[in-house]
Image 1 (spheres, rainbow, N blue to C red):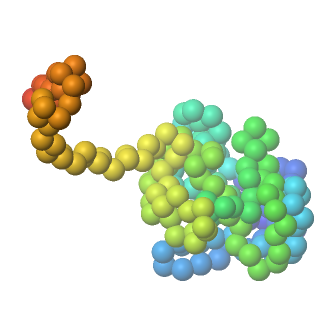
Image 2 (image 1 turned 30 degrees about the horizontal axis):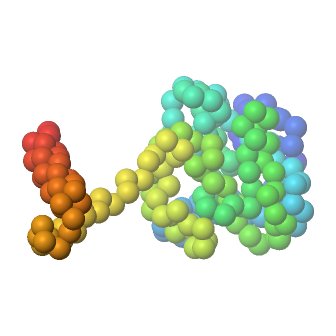
Length: 188
């Protein structure tokens, strides 16, 4: 059996093999990816990840636990990202499963945000899925919500148009908002 891994790596059960996959150059934006050579049904075991266990995060490593990564620049590190992937990695067993039926000729994909707390390098996603999240950076990366400033609308209210208690409440609320904006503006 022709292997993706160097001979000094131990052979693991369900290791990826040349009969099922190829690593190829996809394009200039995505780099290398894994091409599927035969059909797999949903739930099928695709392969078991191999590699070097390390505390260092690399471009081709996958997080097994906080501070622990499995570096695999030969095969699993070439599986591309998709926000709607066709595979899923069980990090405890290091086994990739088909999340749906996969047909020969597809590129193998996974959701990097499912395994990584923080990616080695965040990137703008180009997966094309209708569920695309845009930026991929890991589970802990928080997308900053755009700050929306409340439109200030000047409302003129006179005591003759409203009962006195309601007018007093509106004026007190305006003073509280004005004081809060002055305080917020002085914050560092």
